[in-house]
Image (cartoon, rainbow, N blue to C red; front, side):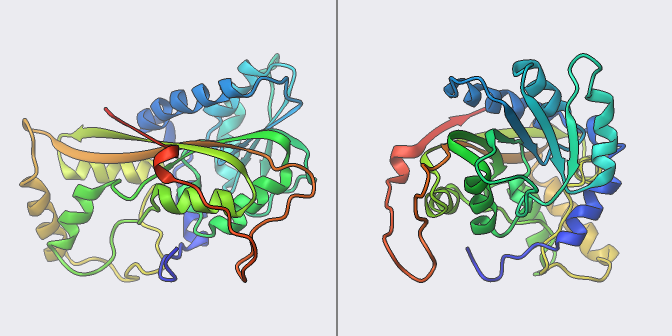
Length: 294
């Protein structure tokens, strides 16, 4: 991972806290990706006792996990308290789930205490993959399932290109590719990772509608490298003009590259690859990858 790739965690938390009330007005893509992720759970053949939904947001996924694993303790974990407050409406009397405010890189659960760790479109907001997947490996039981989705680097490529024509500043968050993610999973000691890529193209009536959706989701720019002052009207207008040239059949396109993946909790006592050397696991990305276009 590049040393210049750093997220402002305070801003990430604030963005999602502010979006808690509007999130479900804009989460059609998140729900579609959730279907892909639920398919991954079919690989887990045991009856889980504890299931985590990390980056649970407003709890739609947590409720689906409780539907699937009715006897399990399902716990929604999120960094933003307002999101968890909004999730309460999805925790039903007969099928309740718990809600815990915590950072994905510091999960408040004992070692080897989780059977299934699920995360839908959250991990792209974490820039320390070693810490993230190290925590996943720590809390998962041996043979427990990690299933997650995240955004790849082609996400919002049209918006990024439009801004690049307006100025040289950072306006759109960057996302890591499958090679980085797969390597980080192996480095953390997680077993037999399998990753797939899907590309979704959503269309909008105008660039402004896309920007409204991003704000409503809390998915606005959070790189530490972003400009801290307001973007000038002239730059904003040039960005809009550049995006307008990309219309297809009268609509503004926005690409979302989605990586879905699963891996397994390491056996007891398995050593992890350290940054200072030691045995290095190798794998072929081609052997992990499947690509579907939508």
